[in-house]
Image (cartoon, rainbow, N blue to C red; front, top):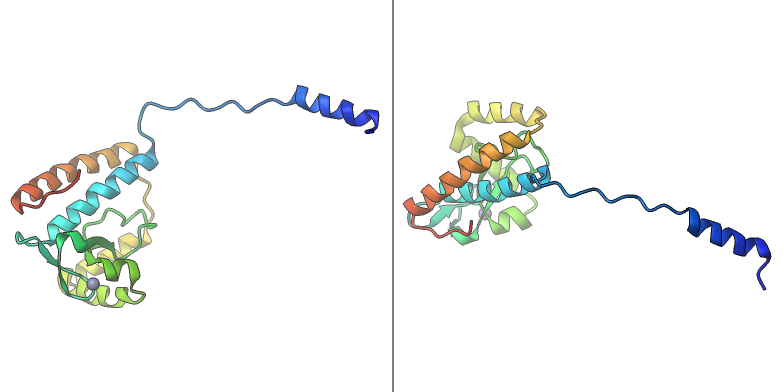
Length: 164
Ligand SMILES: [Zn+2]
C-alpha cells in the first residue's frame, strides 16, 4: 500500500496543472509559407528561363542537355543563405544527378557560372552572399507576384506545362 503523501501529492498535481493556452491561428500567411511559396515559383521560373523552346536545357554543372522535367533549380550558394536564395545569378538549371547526388558539382558549377555571367557579376554575387538579408512579408509577396507572372509568360512562350 502507498503511503498517504503519495495520494495527496498526486491529487494536488492534477488540480494545479494549468494547460498552456494554444495560440490563435492567424489569417495572414506566415513567413515560412511565403518563403515556401516563393521557393516553388522561383524554381519554376529558373528552370523555364534556362530551357530552350524545345523544352531542353543544359545543366550548369555537367553540361548535359536534359528535358525540363529532369532539371532542378540549383543554387550555387545554398538555400540557407537568405541573401542569395532568390537571386537570379545564384540559381540555374541543374540536372537532378548533379543537384541532388553529386558531391563535387559545385566545382564545375563555379567554372560554368563564371563563364555564363562573367567575373564581375560573379564577384558581386559573392559579395551579396556574404551579406545578410531579412525579407519582409511584403517583399516576399512582391516577388511571388512577379515570378508567378513570369512563369505564366515563359510557360506560354516555350510551350511547357507547369503545375502552379
Ligand atoms: Zn548535371
